[in-house]
Image (cartoon, rainbow, N blue to C red; front, side, top):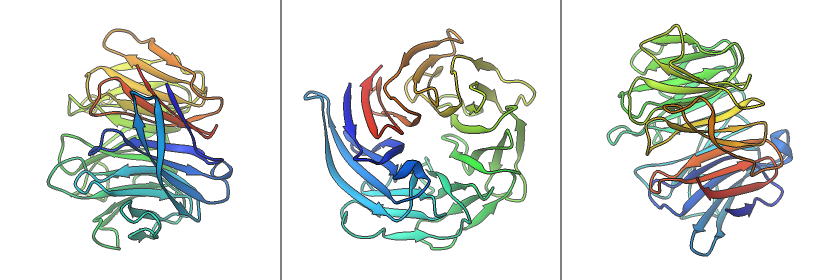
Length: 312
């Protein structure tokens, strides 16, 4: 396990680059995101030397709550901020301001995602203003605003299979599935938890399957063609599930990060109990990612101002 300290910045999101397997981005905030600025750290990971080296850091006047890499331009990233803005950064120019800033959300942007297919180049942003917005990264105005939730939207994620399809989850306990061509209402709406839903993640092998993580500590796996009950339920988190992510390498493996300070690895095809539990942090775990290039390589970050890179 290798540790990187984020210099009095509390970690909210960590992502491996899809183009450089040893490069990670970390979105952080001062003062637990309640006030102060945000810093985007870019670090390289050397597994042989067990070393994480800071390469760049870029600053914003409000906290940064999520980060996502471009899949087509290796040096581009997007972050979501507490002031309701979305920033696009180019790390070729780390000392400069964002190359573009999007300014339409009225409250915190807590989730950003970049379209996964090779044809479209669209962004999603999810906000506490109860909306999801669709962006063309080359334009300053959003293309569409989706308003299907009654409470703040915690996360919106593109489907890796279904063109123009994404999922959103909210404090209203609903999992909504959207077709971008029909912005007025979700095509599927599931009352997925009797609590706030903080995270969702699509299965990388089956197009209709995705996981949700709830504030009551449950992880549920859904087939969106079957609306009444989850196909699996995982119990073992002692507090809210802040992040879930389905594995890019194994169909029934997923990982979770929880307010109980643990990162857990699950294989729901085998058991409803966690396969591994890692207490890497002394405070809330907020961000995690699995490397798409290296099976078993993970990173997580938390409010203890530390990032851990480790193997499972």
